[in-house]
Amino acid sequence: MKTIVRQIHITQDFHEVRSGMHIEFRHLRTIKAIHENGGLAKAADQLHITQSALSHQIKGLEDQAGVELFVRRSKPMKLSAAGFRLLRLAEKILPEIDAMQVEFSGLRDGKSGRLHIAIECHACFEWLFPVLEAFRRLWPDVDVDIKPGLAFDALPALQKEEVDLVVSSDPEELKGVEFSHLFDYAPVFVCSSQHPLAQKTYIEAADFRGQTLITYPVDRARLDVFSQLLTPAKVEPAAIRQVELTAVILLLVASNRGISVLPDWVVREVKYSSDYVTRPLSEAGLTRQLFAATRDEDITKPYRLDLIRLAKEEASKLQSAEALGKWRVPS
Image (cartoon, rainbow, N blue to C red; front, side):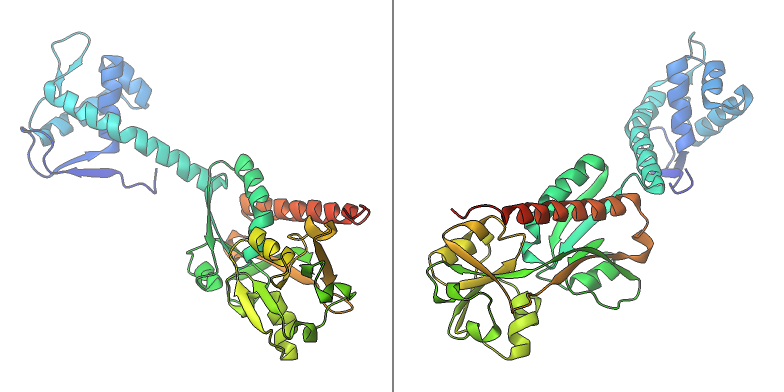
């Protein structure tokens, strides 16, 4: 294989071998083939070379080693003690080389690769895990890893090839980066059914004054409630409480410890519970878009296209479930 270095430098493998011996992969395959076939004729056929060329190769290898690698008087032809040491080397190295060839072939054909994902959206784990489970079954040879993009600049990391895909709601004009639309979502206000704001039909920026706002532990610039509502209106809540887990946020909200704004796919189950009230942000409601960012050269990779498709399908399932839920009788 052209991309594999075809030569191994062995400085001291046998007591009898001179230092600086050079062994190529073809030599290891030759030793193995002769051992398995018991002679030069069958080994030459297996290796698709002439018997003369094979004999010449063996002589050159023995000249390098300074020892005989075969006991030629035996029938069938057998390896010497030095030959067996070289065979052990072949049995150790050749399977690794063959596996690498298969891996490189998969990379070339788009059947394998690396897909390290950075997520700038904390709540995205709620819908991403089912997507990745389906993706894993379709593409078992693709190395998938999740790197939360909340502690570093995910998009620059994408450009530097430190990650391969970034899930973000904030597309930017970046050289060599393509943003693919995944789905639309609505940031939704949620509070306890006992909270005074539960009486309103929609929530405005001014309603957050004097309130404890419960958010994920991320910079406010990455939170829809700030970037799309409070910061433009120059409104500051009385307090901000940061919580890692969605379930804990909802528990605190149900206990009337504060209010929150979460994506619609997060609140789809609690939306119809008597413990909670959900309301749109502003009379018209807010709509946001989620994107998958990848490098330009990765756009057409089959497994990348499948991940985008699965993400869209999962979002459609969640949105369909929410639409059906609107006809449920509140508990």
